[in-house]
Image 1 (cartoon, rainbow, N blue to C red):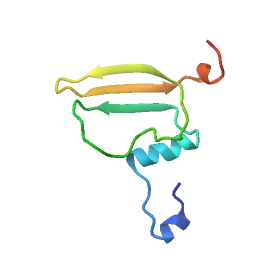
Image 2 (image 1 turned 60 degrees about the horizontal axis):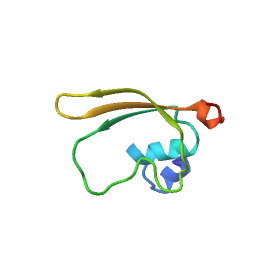
Image 3 (image 1 turned 30 degrees about the horizontal axis):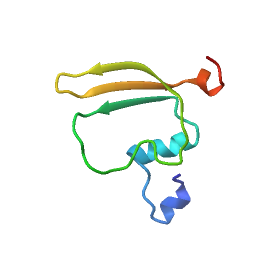
Image 4 (image 1 turned 90 degrees about the horizontal axis):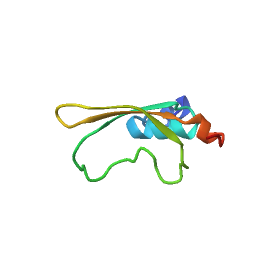
Length: 85
């Protein structure tokens, strides 16, 4: 989590996957819009880091572009969170 006090101390503002992790940890993300590229990049920051817990998601839309990239939209499945079918 980033705050003005953190900025004073020189900590960088979270961006990308780290920002998404921070917001997800606060239960503040209702929809994920992702682009999936058809290659393996090796290493990096995981969108869903270990220890974040499972978040039930429902795919809302998917689209494949001509260059092989897939656009994916997921929303939180509130019914699954509440134990409803």
